[in-house]
Length: 343
Ligand code: ASP
Image (tube, rainbow, N blue to C red; front, side):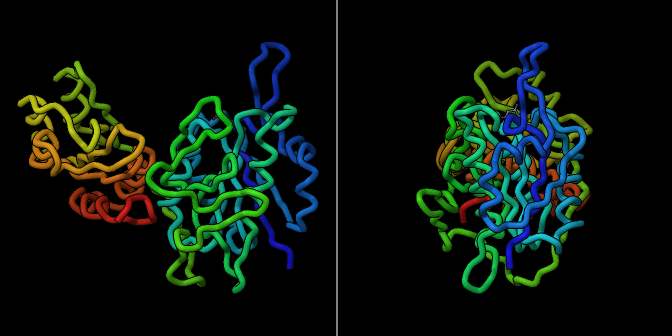
């Protein structure tokens, strides 16, 4: 039987066209996208489309849209073998990361893709990205199970785990990287899946559970030379913030100044979740390596290990949405929930 795939079109460059009145790119409708990719009809895959309204540049993505996306998948889960989400590249890694935590017990592929050049442009990367994403979403193994029962991003011949990816280039077709986790698949003349790396559900007949409550009381603070006490305090000790992601240097290091550590201790005493992620694109936080890292640990900061900032944000939104108890959130934060940190 032919696979059925639902394409969820949210907007992004892939579906944009130049507006002759002001020369900017604006989204056009899905039928025009399909008309640009007649090759999709040759797959023998049944394709349906669901279009978001309004279509957006992904810079406008809000958590409400993730809820909408997750509910769209949940409501049609039984009708399709896989889902392809056409999405702008700017926040695709945030969306894919957060969806990976929202969709628990996933047994079907949810593949994000988009492009750097609109699909109607002769040198577009959108066609190959779209066609291969559909092929991956439809792929089954010998037992008839989905080859990739994960939330992933397909871009420029690589399939990356969604919660490991980050937008890396504003211009290259190779726009996404996953420095701490190898690709789940590579597309050459055929698509080569890394079957060891791809996560499998515990039960193939598991029920999908969708988390629709996200708590966004999270701040991201990038540590930098010249950081002031006032800024640091206003972020870490703000009464409305439940968690702070500290983007630190190298293997998790930051200032050793007493005021900096005192503010962290104050935040910790207020019950805040303080998470250490590295500003480096690859590698991991290790707060036992340098004295400056160790003092963060003593101030109550947790290690994010090799998690990306995008995944840390999505994981916190979901965990905080599940419980008002920050101690429980801290325990869960250090666990690998869906492949977002290396064990
Ligand atoms: N600004 C666009 C977006 O994220 C960029 C893209 O799709 O490549 O929607």
